[in-house]
Amino acid sequence: MSDLKQQVENVRSSFGQAVASVMATDALQELRVRYLGKKGELTTLLKSLGKLPPKERPQAGEALNALRDQLEREIEQKKQELTRAEDTAVEVGDRLDVTLPSRGRAVGAFHPVAQTMHEIVSIMQGLGYSVALGPEIEEEHYNFECLNMPSWHPARDMQDTFYFPDEKENAPEGKGQRMLEERMLKGRMLLRTHTSPVQVRSMLQYGAPLRIVCPGKVYRRDNDPTHSPMFNQLEGLLVEEDVSFSVLKGSLRELMNGFFERELKSRFRASYFPFTEPSMELDIECVECSGKNPNCRVCKGTGWLEVCGMGMVHPFVIRSGGVDPERYNGFAFGMGLDRMAMLKYGINDLRLLFDGNVSYFLSGRDV
Ligand code: PHE
Image (cartoon, rainbow, N blue to C red):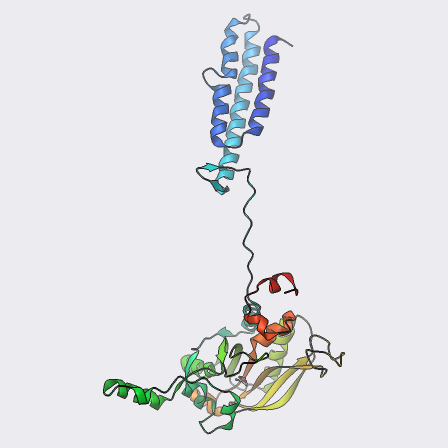
């Protein structure tokens, strides 16, 4: 191999190593100067061409030009790689170290009740329902009267209510007093005890036909290990012409099987709610033991779990919603989302749902 050929090969291999170890664009610029600058290694070789015997010049020239093209190509390629990496790299002071590993992602998760709510809402959306929301601070009128529960109705005691204080006595004379009296005529304000007031509110707003679900917080004066004063419900309402009870049964079966991701036995038990007639409660097969364990802590050995109240909407309620009960009928159901979450995710203590210890839900059962 001639002297020059040897030198070309040396430059090629030393450049190859150098370019592979370059980690930043400014180092790449230095490399370019070292090889292709005025006094660069390759430039010096090109300059030495003139000293060769004329016979050898064309071939040597060709080899050197080919090398120059190669170096330029490789530098350009590396430059693109580096700028792409630097764009996404972690910044360290005013320098970028593209060799640093990426920062870990913060781990987060939806609360199991929020997950449950999303899952049930999306199943119901698949059945043609839209989401409607209502206020948590509600009028007595929507929470009770419109739902066929006048003040003397014994069922009001079933839902021990948080009322806002009656400020009438303390109100100042004059305008304030009058405003309060007007409000008193509409009834007291309270924290809604169920999501059912949204039935009437959405009929008034959208009319019929209508299919809605309403997830949300509700409040009752309960506070013990199995009842929280604030919990979550999901209401469903369908108002159409000629709706039969079997549509309600079918829809709820679809919902339960979809939510628990398997075929579950279910049964409908006669029950009572003032705003539905007839009224039923839905029981599903125990998701823990399927009725096989007489000592099951989830179903208490009964094999069944109560999951949902429901019924055909009472004509009184349809009328309260401004819809003609002679033409339209429908069904409604209401279920506790906290309970559904506990059943699906095997959470055995309600209080865990209000606990800030996220690790319980992320890493399994050891709290
Ligand atoms: N609102 C009832 C409850 O809170 C549940 C329900 C809703 C029952 C709709 C029938 C129809 O217990």
